[in-house]
Image (tube, rainbow, N blue to C red; front, side, top):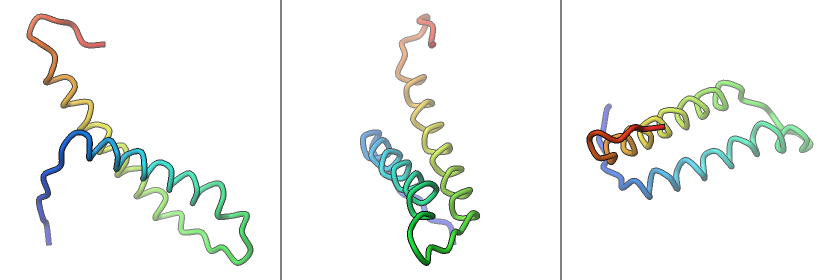
Amino acid sequence: MLKTVKLSTREIELLVSLASDQLFRREFIDPKMPGHVSKSEDITLGKSLVARLKAILDQDKVRGVPPGKKTG
């Protein structure tokens, strides 16, 4: 089932930050905990999702640039 959710730029920025922090924890901190079971497919999927959200933010930034001004 595919659903559409509208989020503000600030909400996406916050989600990217939180997801990045969580991925770091799962990839580098959790494996040091006793009994940890790694789910590399979740980390891979999470990294892909963060990249997609960052791309959305980049598109919004590009759209916000007045015509005639260079980006980057």
